Image 1 (tube, one colour):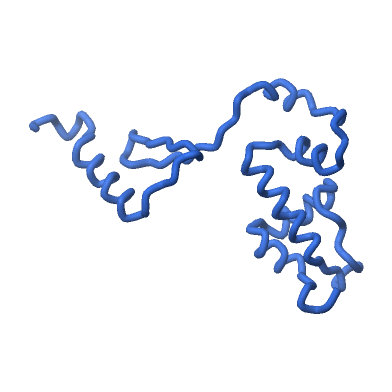
Image 2: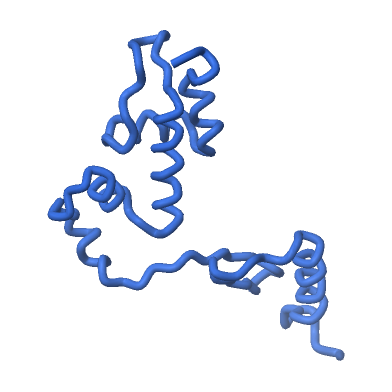
Amino acid sequence: MDDAQRYSVGELAELGGVSRRTVRYYVQEGLIPTPVGLGRGAHYGPEHLEQLLRVKAMQEEGMMLEEILAALSGKPGRAIPLAAAAIADVNRSRWTRLQLAPGLELHVSGARRLPPPGKLQELAEWCRRNFRGDEEGDDD
């Protein structure tokens, strides 16, 4: 591994879009391999980044860390903790929650692409004008 392919924990975290603490936790839980070297000389390589991105992608699909670990280890029979087993049959989907005005939210399925920020701002402004609270009166 040459120097161009060596990452500090901070660099790996930044490239993976997570915190340093998350990287360390994933190593501790066996989700990504331990770094090469010890102490201040410890570093990560492309295989660490690939694994980190794989874990993130699986999380974004709605998988729990226990399920990800089982999938990565290739052990289909791995036990899932009781709390996870209780909700294993729940149909999970990713949603984005946007507050358009006080007391008014828009929930958008992950299967839908959000409009550009400018269009969302227009929608929020329209909602603020048209969904006023009782204290403002209804004189329209």
